[in-house]
Length: 337
Image (tube, rainbow, N blue to C red; front, side, top):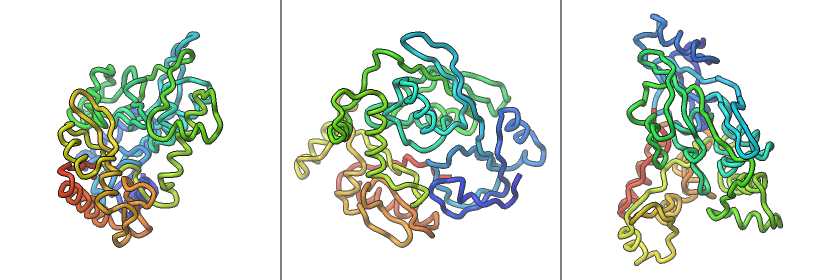
């Protein structure tokens, strides 16, 4: 237990903020004990995983509990698929590599996404044409109101684009303890048509790609576009890619005929937020100690001494500019605390 603890090393933006109390928990029972401890009963509480999708807007006046639950368990497998139970404190990318090394398909496109396994269903993480909901069977969580262990099926998680029940109805009421996944051992359909995956495979002269090749291509793409948080503080993609009506797209195409887009359901398209931000003049622009990254406009960065209000103000300025120019309002993917 630490008091007046620095959170700088517990979140990837690397901004200096403090927590009144901080503790690392290694089991649901340990977390429950702190929640029920009279010394902390009246304090606000925050469960933190890898801290890769959070912007602290101020010092946290309560108890921060850092998730350190560990374990990967094979529950069942046959010649075609494998069923896993993964503890929520496991590192997500380490899990992906664990599966890729065993040639288990389904999450290779999600390589190098920062954060913990517990955050994956909360955000319904996705990249390069794949979302976690496609391989997730159920989620186990501790109900923070009665401390009962409960599970939700894939359907009950109410997954949407970077959305789930854990960000709405169960926000602040559930501590995800484990995620259950079903991955493919044979007949896995590789997804290579999103982003620059095919180009990377051609560069590497890979003619018959496998799961590991897709993972390597995704890692190479992400490393070429996204700054390493250990070197330049950031929380990855700061904004969600907006989903808009095709009529909105057609309006943009009158002035920007080459605007990129992807189908997103009947009458809907997804427009890359990074493109909108770049076209609004923010890519590579530095404002004080923060700015939009030079290689990926979607990433807001901390150049070393940024204050929380600098990042927040930059985000709001970008939102206002994009809405003024394109009539599309961006929404943060990062959680403000």
